[in-house]
Image (cartoon, rainbow, N blue to C red; front, side, top):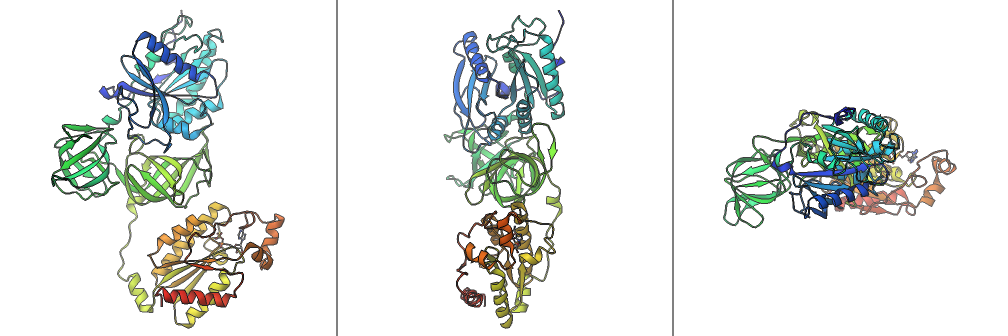
Length: 625
Ligand code: ADX
């Protein structure tokens, strides 16, 4: 008999040994559309029940770290789905509790797969002995690896139908082993099984005489997964902080990772303020010696610490990274594409900050491992990107700590979850580029000009009259001795924004630049008139947020499309209608009317001079003059 140990088609790399916390193993069943995933789970359940009566076989959902034996516990590990939970079956083998989540029915759902992978320790990839390497299976493997799965088992099913052919098994296993090679997994193994007959699933089968490795369940039992959340450094997103009823300073939250013990030193990552832990209180208020990952605790401290909800409390001797720029893999989950420069909200731990993707380095082709150039990310696409947050955030690399290394992205207006990401590394730039302190300030520059600088943002369709009204207003301001400047979309597109076209992504960048230039000019003490179509609410809001309250006026030049088209001063509408120009606002590209503009001008009716006067009067009322 030929000896074919499983490591002929697999491997294991050195990993930290198992400890008490690893008695729970989370497994996700992956694979293409091949049937048998549910049957595999069914088999595992039935057989473990038969061998070890009362061994479980419960059903539950995981949204986090579940201590062995308990069900339905809402843990802390970020569930990338944001809302839904991942269904799982609970198997107890005597040695281990194994939580199995099946992805049947979600084969095409990147978001579900990524989420299931993100809370799992190992993946069982079910393939068919009669098939070759499948694109969808490769995609599943790739997604699992991106979201942190370091251990994979290839379960080669229907070996009975393949006549238990060693050749067929070996060929398939080798092909997949070659595919996973670049993923730097901790372990990979291939096991010939038959879900129909139950071969090699719970017990070794004698049918594959050439296979000497363990059955699937045995293999999973023996899997040494890397340290669980308890073995990571102590991290706790702060839910509240302040003096407790007893007067001592205390912080509370749910421990994301690690263990905190009485007497240990902890520090608020953002501020660096340190304190000693003088008491650990559990959910019921009872005093404990320690608190561990997954537990909600209140920590009594020996001194006041400057902390706000959302701050991360960490072990003083093992701190996370802090940066406002980092590289990450982002999985996009929204119908509207991800656009670099667009403002989103980023939630990491308990903290939510405004953020944007500054650059898409590449898009991952999950079918082929290829890196593709991309300007935007569509739904279900995964990209490697640079992220910039408005304020520095504390995080760990996802590879080191899944609990503190992942984040969600939300739309700023609808608050829908639009993306999920895992942080690969912080960017040096974040800490190396500082603000230069200057002595002559915005206020002194404005004082010298004797005016209150501000930004007047004109938005509206092409041909709506933005520039004509802005021009009339500037003449009037000038006549009153005001220092002004007009930024016009058409003009800046000849210089500063020469590299930009009219795709959504280019318009977002166009507005981002215009807004920042306007801000510089306001800092210089000017009254700046910005005249850009600026079709999207998100970017107009981003522009507004760059300025102080009362320093930004959104002026909606509301001329109906029919009138703009009738005017057709530049002949562009005609070209747009004939298809000669693409992505034309109002025709083949959308315009989102302002939700609450500071001034709403019905510009189809009144002449520009009258409208300019209206703005002038408004500014006077607002105390600009
Ligand atoms: S924005 O959408 O990015 O804010 P911007 O104000 O800079 O647009 O430029 C709009 C001007 O570009 C229009 O007034 C028009 O003269 C010209 N233009 C050329 N192609 C297009 C297009 N596809 N959509 C809109 N405007 C276009």
